[in-house]
Length: 207
Image (cartoon, rainbow, N blue to C red; front, side, top):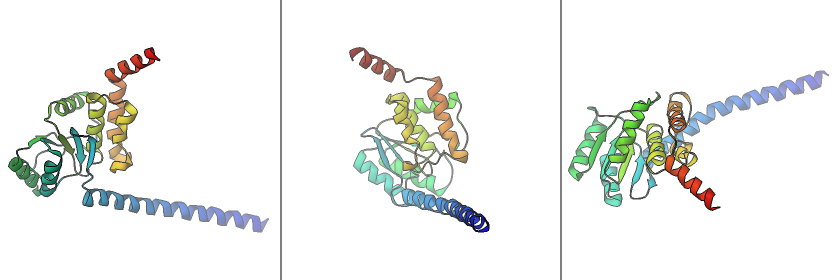
């Protein structure tokens, strides 16, 4: 009995140590993943070819590169206007290239209300294309804006649009970042993707 009890205790202890190790290692791996995304790739992705792109905070050189390659006509900055060096570099580069800069700051860890969402969608709809969306890391706020674009403007089904808020882009739906997921979920519940629904009905009628 003592041997069995001791064996169980050892197994339980090993499990706790493994679990603790997982909690220690996971943030390190996640941090490394996000560092690589932002430092080496600028977390740049093509969402809709020749129409919509997303990234982390772009450097002036990176803006020039994607302007030459993709013909970017406008950039939506979700961090807002300020006097920091990164903003001055972005603003100067954009001005020199003749790109339209749109500043629309949204909180990184707070849900958006319907008025803010509708304003954001209106900006996304009217912005000259091709459009680049960015925030700081290009994961949370940029993910929400990209998801709203696909759902409300490109009329993608919800499950596809919500894919813009995923770990693939560095988005982890925990703590403050989860407010982006909640915002998108609330919006899609209240406002249906009418065109997609009509297309689905048409398809079902033909079947």
